[in-house]
Image (tube, rainbow, N blue to C red; front, side, top):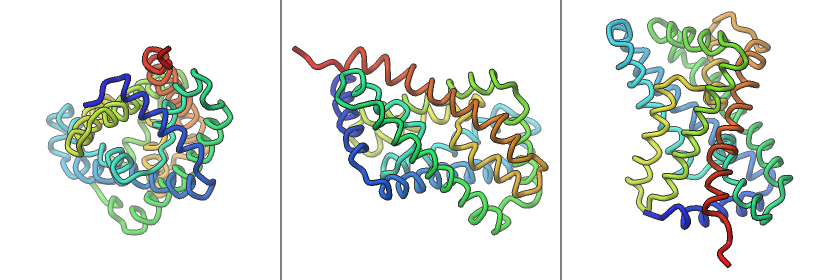
Length: 260
């Protein structure tokens, strides 16, 4: 595996490459990432939602089953290539600290990727999931509605803090994936932290772009304004803090400086 110092060098080059993408390339890669994360969510819903007995008798195991399936999305993002907003919250920070890149490049990337991720997640929610009735009946529908109600029932502060926890672990997963030199190592390195954040019930803005709109399409009664203001905004802000402040900043400061 690569050392943290070696890993930061790889991350710096990744961030520089991202700045060079055209707008259309960034949006297409972002659409794919949103779709991949949503596929992970659909897999988790299918496995956990299809096990109501386990949910009732062993909720801890049910949470683990859900968490164990979800990392498919981030594994796809890394192995086949895509642009994920939450991962990019950390990637640019080391280069900004050393002035190799401007903050403008980061914010431009974040905006385009966030939009593309949203479109990709909505596509999987409406076209691939809702129109095909994959979760339109019990017990799957019960879980879809339960997840969305839970995610929109917390205060702004609670969702914000859960957003920090989610992207702290997601960006660590990406850091670990970069440190691994082979495919199996990358899969294991990514799977562990992502499984953890989902099992713990943290808030990932891109995943929520799938879960909560899906519940809206499936008749939960949750409004779009409730989704945006009660979950998406605080989760997004928390994700930015978790990725930039707790991963990109400390590791960029500790290992990103050019040796004299």
